[in-house]
Image 1: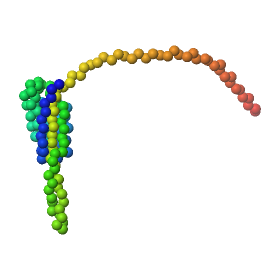
Image 2: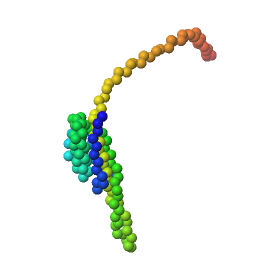
Image 3: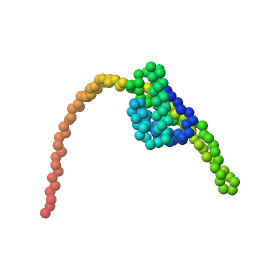
Amino acid sequence: MATAKATLSNFRQAPRKMRMVANTVRGKKVSEALINLDFVAKKASAPIKTLIASALANAKALDIPTENLVVKTIKVDGGSIMYRRRPAARGSAHPIRKRTSSIFVELGEVESKKKVKVAKEVAIEAPKAEVVKKAPKAKKTTTSKK
């Protein structure tokens, strides 16, 4: 099964924000994912759409049929962090971490699910044990004195 891949390194947005968009397209058909990304109101949707389009172009270059490609894996990892300082009281400074993301996309073909016939299990009943009937107990009669 052939796959097409594409990566984007050190994109200047936090991985937590990128993963929200990446989770919306994971496992979907490529055409459906590209349409959905047009309607996602997040900054991360544009670079992810470009990355999926790049992986699709890589698939065409590898002569992979593109009709039934799906987003097999999309992985967002943290990239390098840019450290900055913010001035604080009495001459001190607080750190600012400007995070970046590295995104990996892999497109693959849909695996056809084959139906496998499973033989029905036949329950074998154990022979019933003979039930011995007990004689009914005699009712005790009480005599009441009046």
